[in-house]
Image (cartoon, rainbow, N blue to C red; front, side, top):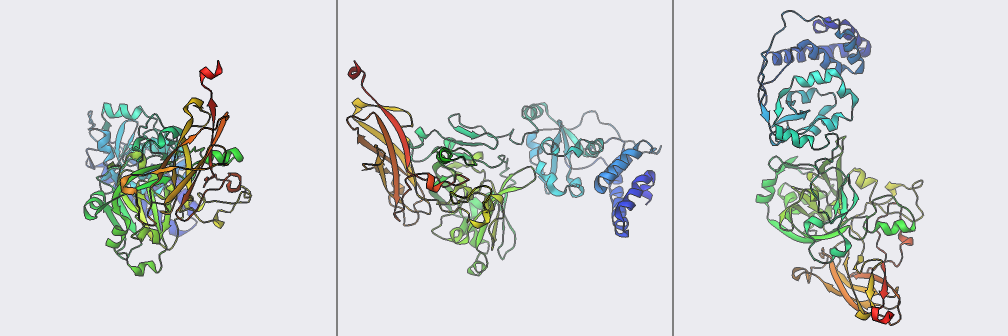
Length: 577
């Protein structure tokens, strides 16, 4: 109790709140330990990264820390008695240094773990809070700010604006940011977790800025079999994390060997590099067509929330077997869960899972990808590592992969349990039960017209109209035919399919990439308007439904009805004279 005598109200508050001897026997000695720890810090100028710069408020800090740990009532008691506390005349005086060490943002970013030290910035000053992490009342959530600014996280909780919190922080100051870093930091909104997002191609059609979601113009989608990374559709659920490849670790759990931590270098050097060409499609692709039937909840995607790329990396099967997966593990395990490094402000990460048989199958071709189109993954697409699950809905292709768990359960993530599921057209938000429907995995057959665009016109003098588009089917099923009509579905024509030389004859069940298609159709003599329609057929003879209404669902997913585009037929000018 001797450490609490200078503030008797705080001591009494501990005893009143505890109502038991366990608290008085547990917390108070613990505070004594902290007091000795802090006293030793008070007399020391050493620490991580440089000299500590302190104020001579040792006892203030002691009571402030007690206040944080005891709760709001203790903080109030601290404030009530603060003016009554008399500091001892023998207080230790520390030398004041007029030129604190100067750091860059890059130096701060390297210190984002307990192993390397936990540094943060606040209003242009740098703090090493490594020793405080274990004492933080909010637990390890403080690590969310590691290597960056405190402001976005402190903005969520008003208690951080209290004077005593700033006093605590001041004890961990090690220096300041250099002018250039400070300018860079101030050029972004410190309260906005999206302020450091990567630059994007201006051609992208944006559906949401925060988080960023965008699709390429439909008119360019079928111009290239491989979609350039810059215009590959972007689907982010949370802020894009900044991941240091040198400190990156992929944790793998659920195997007999226990928890395994794998570096990026190990993924690249210890496992054969495998490459696949695979199309990814958002579950909400073409949602805008469902909105025309009845409003749904979700981003208003057009027809271009789908793209095709080459992906390179380590086989998930190879990695799991290397670290101890055996047939015996499969007796109990049924799923492989993935967790990203993208997190919300509460520390909740994006997550998803796929069936174990897909993950471990030689024919499943699931990759821990670190390259896209022959280059490092771009930040928007999961740098440094993402999982690519070909033939499966984009939501399961988790980006910025941080954790893999072999489990008997599906991921408990919101995006696995309460989203990306299909329901009857008669189900509404008052009656929906997300647990009654399975999570979407393989997607149904899909196709769309990319040229000509809705509302455009064609010249009658051209005598024919060129129609282009894409087609794809989930689960590795190959598209074998695309039927095209220019009169609303009365007369049909078979389009010519295009794919790369390497994808001409995919192995059965491994047709992961789309087919682009094209056809020239003669113009009817008297037509004033064309209703262009396309529908695809895969090698299981699955085809698309003719209208949207029967497949409408409240989340607007799995939209794959015949795609329809109306264009005008424009008479030649000489014919109009």
